[in-house]
Amino acid sequence: MKAEEVLEEFRAAGALLEGHFILSSGLHSDRYLQCARVMMDASRGARLCAVLAGKVRQHLDDTLIDLVVSPAMGGVVVGYEMGRQLGLPAVFFERVEGDFVLRRGFEIKAGARVLMVEDIVTTGLSSRECIAAVTAAGGITVAAACLVDRSAGTADIGVPLVALAQLKIHTFTGDNLPNRLKDLPAATPGSRGMV
Image 1 (cartoon, one colour):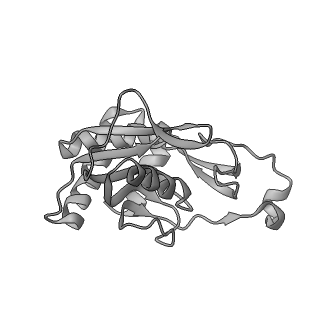
Image 2: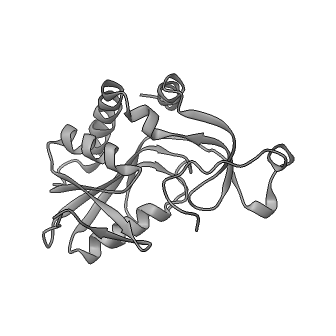
C-alpha cells in the first residue's frame, strides 16, 4: 500500500483535517490526521492493520514478539487490531499524573519481547515514553509500528519503526507560525494535554 493510498483511506474517513492545529507535542500544524475516525470503520482498520502487520513480519523476519503494547489513548485501537492481526495479546499504558503506567491488571513478563504500536508518530515523544515504560516494566521493545509516520522517518524513537506510510507534514513552533496560520483559530484535537 502506497502513502497516497493510505491518505485516501484517511480522506474517505474524513480523517485528514486541514486548518490550524496544536499537536500533543505543543507544535502547530496545518494538517491533522484523526486516526480514530479511520479506525471507527472496523473493516477499514482491519485492512490497514493487515498491511502493517505484513510489513512488521517482513521487517522483523524471524524475531519473535510476545506482546503488543500501545500508549493510550491514540494507540489503543490500533494496538489491539495489530495484536489480532499478529495473533498476540495486546495491552496498553495509560497516563497517571503524566506518566505511563500499566493498569487494569495488565503486566509485562520479565524479558518479554514487545512490539510498541502507535497510531501516528510526529516527534516520537509518546513512543519514547512508552518504550521507556516497557523497559521499566521488564520488557524489551524490539521494534515499533505505526499507521503513519508524519516525520517522514526523521523521528528517532530508539528502536526500528515500521510505518504503513511516511509523510512529511510540516510543524511549527508557536512563535514561528507561517502567515496562513496566524489568523486561524487553533484546535487541539489530540488526546494528551499540551507539553
